[in-house]
Length: 428
Image (tube, rainbow, N blue to C red):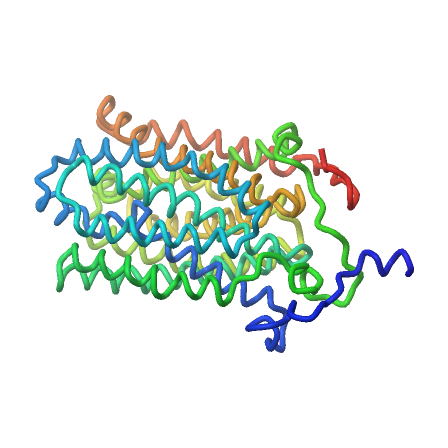
């Protein structure tokens, strides 16, 4: 047996059985679609998802806004702690069984929320949906794509990002209408049941943990395959690159969560009405979706580090510009700039970790990065609210955050690429 043949995965009987056995194209693209579905399943564990039922839920349970805000904050912080262990489980057991376990727990928690009668019960169940949805399922979804692609990771993540955006756009409309027509409890129970009898079986049917598990090469290209390589989490944490990109995506999450929660108030301060606010949301969303595809292509042909530098530069400029916007044309131009930057940053966040640190410990590294972004996203609304309470305006936040965004963009451009260990080594 030659040395090269020992590195090439063999296809034993049963490896290509089931769905993976009859697809005429690279099975990684099936996993991209499945991963997008899994990210859609995080909806009831996200702030935007809870926002669909906040008003009727508060009225039904007779909970005040400040009490609900505290419930949401602590649920988010506690739930974020699940990012690291789920990353370790993904690396050890594979995506397929971990996804099934997460979806089982998340589905039961969502059904539980539909029947909750007290603030204490609500806190426990929202914490569960934050832990299993926003944290664990997000990490599993993103890592699944990263495990299947190497050279074409940017393209794969661009497609994945667009699928996720389209799925969420459709889901928000359907769930919102269900809440309006049937009430929040029925709508949430339907989501929980859908997770249990729809998403869970699909995860088991479609997902395969790695290309090696079915005897194919990452990216589906006809080249010699080697064992998955990469740095350990401890080694990744010792590199400047991890902290530069983790902090860059975290500060983006902080700004997005702050602006997302107080967007209407921010625009009202600038003299714009609710109709204009809704128009900016549409513009930002559509531009972001389009840019995710372009960003995926640029990251593949150019550089993810360069793409992040460009995106952070555009985002910093949009933050500096926003407080001085005076007309609708300027506001919509700013929304285009912010949407384009956000689309590119999203692609980089999804794609950068396997490129920098390899696939061997991707779940754990992705989990650590996700933990930081969740914590930053939880802090964002608090910082924006505190700024407005102290100064009567949001301007100071924008002027304080913009330089930090620009500095991190420059750092991303110069970030040294970590050295990846050779196949078969511990990787740090």
